[in-house]
Length: 179
Image 1 (tube, one colour):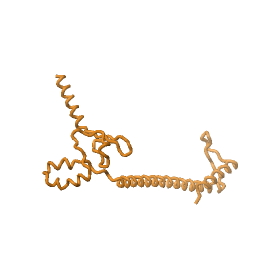
Image 2 (spheres, rainbow, N blue to C red):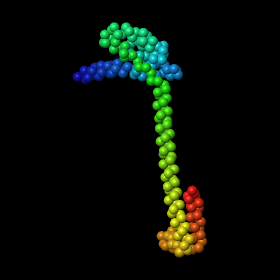
Image 3 (cartoon, rainbow, N blue to C red):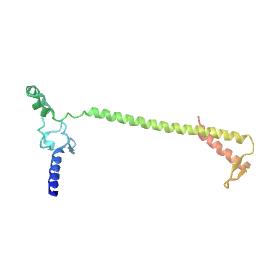
């Protein structure tokens, strides 16, 4: 029973290897390319290193155009293998346009992200400015100001502490309230 399963597994693996047809060729830049699709038409026959066993020889574009009238006389079933010839390569200009479009979208997204961050910072500075001006107005009234010390106790600010706090508020106003 185990031998039967082993033989069945070996046959399935052999069939799977045949189904995973591979093309190998050397592109214009001298790099080896592996694909399950045939190479583009601009790759010469001498650069194709490996092709699936069921694949027919590629027909150059000029020869395909010349044999087009002959294909009209053949039945549809005979014309099917010729129709399965490799697809024409996608135009480089189309890829460049798509790449430029993606690049422009990425730049626009980056600009929008930067603008949102700048808006957030501007909003925070405006809020800081409003609070600092309100605090300065409170200090300028001359009323006694209480704050919590390190132990959490409420204490009144003396004149030196009050002046130091006003100076700190002035630096905040100077940095955040620029118009």
